[in-house]
Length: 137
Image (cartoon, rainbow, N blue to C red):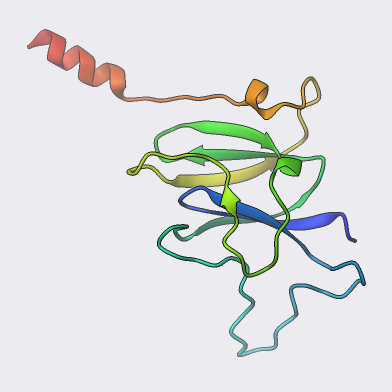
């Protein structure tokens, strides 16, 4: 099935999609035998960080990315570029230096709007407690 792609996201916000099979029907991700070392799916560097998640997705689905700081965004899977198997990917979300991706999940497509900027939500927590303590002092 050429419609399914493998989506990978790294902890520093890089991600990409790769076809499971190429145009000729040949598998991009070869099957390895017992004792094999696996198949490289993303080029991991200090710039990209470690791999956070891997999902089998289709073009019409959405992707939700959650950061350690609590920020959550929702974007269409179709907005993530398709690249080769052993590449580093493209920046999906801009993060602060001390933040990282905590989790990813796929969702059914958002039916009322296609623009991820209209759909995305940002949340942050913990700021109010520290403000109240300094106001009491």
